[in-house]
Image (tube, rainbow, N blue to C red; front, side, top):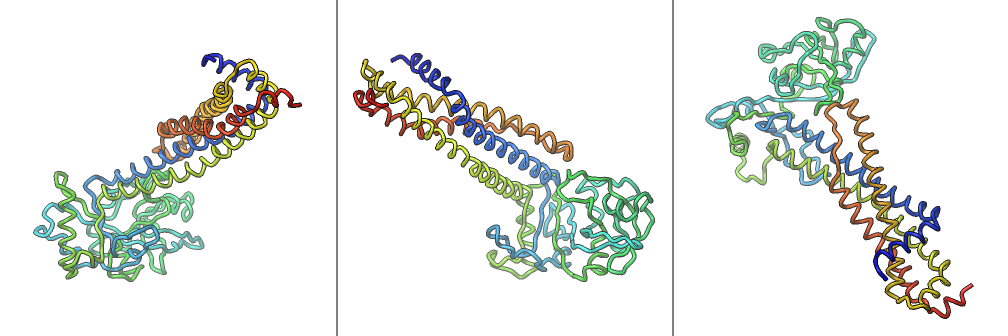
Length: 411
């Protein structure tokens, strides 16, 4: 039998049982659509996160206290106090790190901010005036603190938009006072809403000189981070090596395995985030792919019912010369047609759903964009075809092995 005859015969058989075929195909549509949707949103999230990290600048290096985490459950780096003022002084010595442009100490915490009878829980971010350039922060009112505020431990804060809205409503916060842990601070600037488009949520944050935060609010003598900017033409990898050597000398460490800090370049961070987001994306895709497995079982059940219902037809065809291979090929082709068309419809539905959801997210997060999941499309077509063959094989083999005489007697 020619291929065109097989296709015509298989299509006609599926058309005669249209409702059952459509319901069976729907399982494949849902499975493929879910895979496409998950992969598209996963790639979109990955692109968004990496864009925010890359926005810090290719020459940025972070020094983090504690040893480098060996896995997701390793939290040894948290709450470590290994970065001290002597380390800051050593790094600022140009003979130790010649290509270091700037180093910004960072401390952070969380405290309630009070104004009158109003209280708002915020994140504290203590830094130098370099934070404005590093994170591209432009106040909508007032101006950032400067180096003299840092050295003088000035009681000044820059507040996020949500903090301003909650504590001041329609008043201009600039020049007003707020209290943190019983100490008064003057608001010198207000940040515009970030809209969720930054790596940090500055809307719910107050920013102040790190010296002020250390001495008056947190009561610590160490840093939670050191953020380093290398010179524009410097080799970041070599600068990172110089930073490690300087800190090991400052901490009297001769064995790198005993480091109580770790250095992370932007390339390291991007690579680590890419690995994590890829793993999460494909894990979600694998979970949703279970719907394809369920759809395959549905196809096998439908084909087994079809074999039973068409037993006399199979016997008649075999009695007039149809071979086992031809019968088997027809039933296999029916299963493949169901999964292939279901896969194509699922791809269209998945792309449409992913585009629609990406558009909705984009309205709140302008940096979010739709990404066509080409890997998911190829995977879905391949998996759909394989599902049709694998789950259609047993019913097709059962049909092909029917005895024509017994099949003709079947009632």
